[in-house]
Amino acid sequence: MINMLPLGPLIVGVSVAYTAMTLILYLILQNETDTLIEQIIFSAKGAAGLNLLLFLFFTFGWRKLWEKLPILNKLIFPDLNGTWDMTINWEWDGNSGEANATAIIKQNFLSISMEVESDQSDSESLLAKAKKDPESGRPILYYIYRNTPKDAKKPPYLGTAVLKLGLINPEALEGNYYTDSNSFGRYHLNKI
Image (tube, rainbow, N blue to C red; front, side):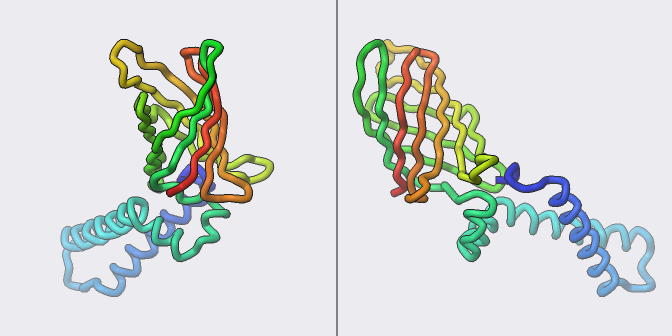
């Protein structure tokens, strides 16, 4: 999520707001008889409080902001957190088929991950990156994963997928995948 924002102006804005808040707190609560050490301690307490507020926003508060201002789902990136029903259409070694799975996407302001569980295997994110198509602005999830078959005789393998948010249905993700075991196919996900 944070990579979707213009980081230079964001850092400058947070720094200016941070400095302004510290200065305002100091001017309101200062005591002319305070020593330099007492002023430094006061400033450190104010800075710690502001750090705590920033931490809480980036960890939990952003989701509340997205709920209150749904336009942020379009302007920045949608909140994909949750459980998704997943259909996997696969082709491997001349065979093809379909499998059902459950995907869980965990997203915070700084990162995103996806784990998938099916009857045959489990997969975990090695890298997941949220981006927007530079031309259309369509949300895309790039996903690199390790898949571990539940059959201990089969070795784990790596795969990549590019999942795009549905144009008509924003509660759907869809895209192709490829693995290093020479299999490929298509993922269809619908949010539960």
